[in-house]
Length: 207
Image (cartoon, rainbow, N blue to C red; front, side):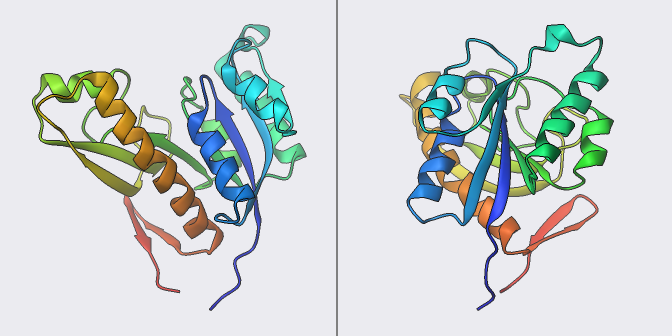
């Protein structure tokens, strides 16, 4: 069995950051061979900021209002991530579209998790959209990031059946449990060097 190297993660989030905290729990529990090198948030009042700081993780608040445009903001993100020698960038509830400058700095090394079975229901309020469309299944998707909104190549998905009594809140809670499991698993596959991209397809090679 090939040895899995410990990779350095840079995490970007805007809200609660529950996926980032779940990844940190998996790292500290020995379930994920990685190190959370730095967390960056674009919101001063993000609960994520306090949560990771309390656990001794370097955290940076980067105010978009201090930059003239998206490109200059993203170049500063790149500088911070490179300064922290990040191998993989993980987005979790980061409410900004990233630019080509960012993508070119970390080609196929930026991931996001989204609470729907993409390409269905990109963007916001996805649980409500799933219920409004009366679909039978929802779930979550981990994908590589491109310049679009939740449009990058799909790496892995987890399916969550929708129940007749579901509300957006109850569906969201069940999907979130799958997110916490799936994201760490995909990061481990990346660390093992088992993710292969061909066009829009992402394939998992055997060990």
